[in-house]
Each structure stands twice: as structure tokens, then as C-alpha cells.
Length: 69
Image (tube, rainbow, N blue to C red; front, side):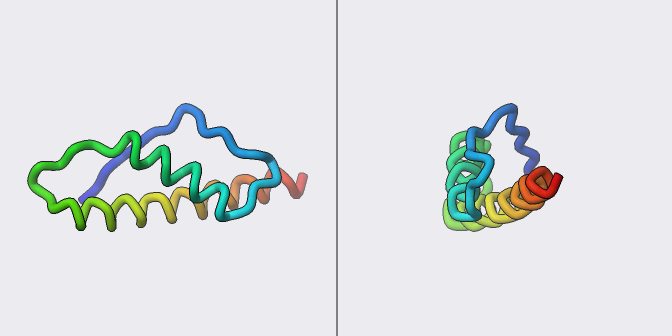
């Protein structure tokens, strides 16, 4: 399964830790997740968690790069 979700804006502090970033990303993923009738709710939740985790890790890398400058 491949789902693309694009965020135009997520509000987090410049010094946010992983937990805060994950929470913001997870909320955004849940709000923008498409309805999939052919997939169980449990599988969708697992996919949402994976997507949130991957996006949060990538955002943390981006934030840490910005902090290093």
C-alpha cells in the first residue's frame, strides 16, 4: 500500500523534541488519512503509525540540520 499525504503546514517549536514532533505529525496524518473501504481498520492504524514515525524522523533530521546552521 502506498499513500501520499502532503502537509502544507505543521506548527512545532524550533526546539521540539521527537515526542512533540511525532504528536504533531501523527495528528496531521490522522486528520488527512484517506478512507479505505478495502482495508481493515487495524491495518490502516498500523499504516498510519508507520507513516507518522517515518515522517517524524525525517522532520527531526530537517530540524537538526537547521539547528546546526
